[in-house]
Image (cartoon, rainbow, N blue to C red; front, side, top):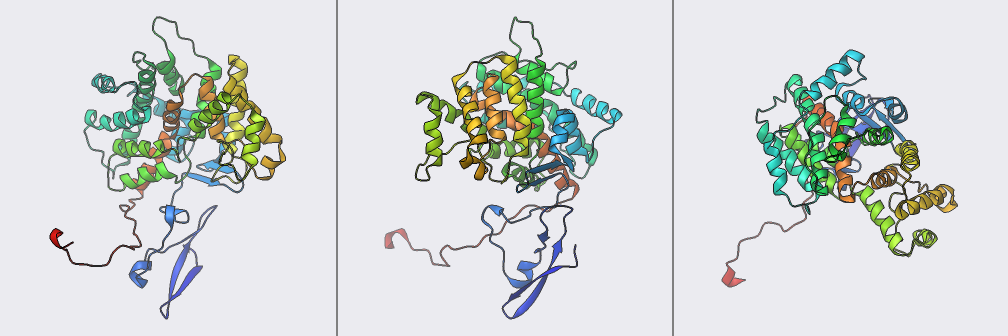
Length: 428
């Protein structure tokens, strides 16, 4: 708390509310006693100005284009770290030693399998089922195969649940992909690291020798790192809200998956590809759609450009752009939609209209075109997002439980009918 206070003058009285200091970024006003003292509540639609918790995990500065995981800039993390190391960092406050990393990786590999009965569940879904619906259902079903309740007061219990879910979730994501593609189910390979293992489970074909492509693995590793956490967004807040009822980790994450599924949250990279395909079907005239985007009276919007949080360049986009360039160069892909994407990227980086408005390509733009290049269907993009975001969800859930945050219970400003008497149907 700070010595600074906010004074509210209301109904002839003054009320003082302390300032909660931050290490960097927004400070808060502690209004926990506001309703008791004044009978008032705050109204903040969408919680745009409301801090629901105090967190030590992730910091982002949208104005300056900065993103830190536990204080480490995303640029350094993406260049020097692996996704497994980032998972440890988010879950455990700091980067691991060699010994700690080996123990963490061993703990994950201990659960590098999913019960055979789960196959029967995935067989029930039609291939037409949306992968996010399948993933959410399978994640929730893990509870039935791991029925022992997690003691949310025990760090050891929570760490055990985290290792188990991290290991099994990659299987569920890979199985969801293979279900969509009509391929047989693969199991994990303990000789590989986390991202390599996921890559093999997804892309190994029957009756073919499998080769790890280091360029693809590196791109996937970067994508997962860049999506690992992003402060108190919709799905993360959902995981924390559900978990605040002392709900278990698997069920809380299943709820987060459903939140991420929404097109206003996790579907942005899919929208990029759909836009590119639309432009391609219309003849591929990029200049036409650039002019439509500039016309304020036209409803068309370029998807994957600008960001509602970052008012400058998305720091994650700078990093993933190189991965995209490497993928295109290594795989020698010929794809009209991807050609259109590269033309749009060039316009956005050179055209004064986009530069002045800071409408730069964002991480969704680049992740979408990378997944397209790898042959991943658009409906699977959000599943890939979920795999990356998993350690963030778990870290936020764990932090909330260690802090013993109270159950979430927002208030409302009621504007409906006042008290009235019931009228019999015959008299209405």
